[in-house]
Length: 105
Image (cartoon, rainbow, N blue to C red; front, top):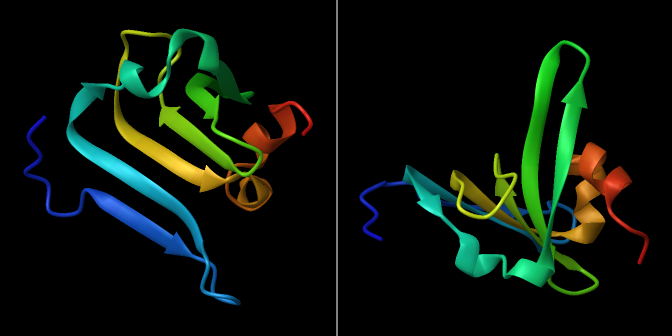
């Protein structure tokens, strides 16, 4: 994987305590990220809005606090231009629809 994109990583910090909340990896060319989501470790969730089609994300719960998300990916073999590593505790603020769908801890 070559990356010629100047802004391929975005780091988000919480202002109040300067803790890292998420790391986003953007790909200029869509990538297969199956190696980050082994078969038994990932599940697909969907954002739904009445006027728009369902939008998939592939999710892997790494541990109690870290969640890996491949944007726009419903199943193995599909390609994405964005992968997000985020604190689970931050999901209600940034991806509330996903936070609501994840199993309880």
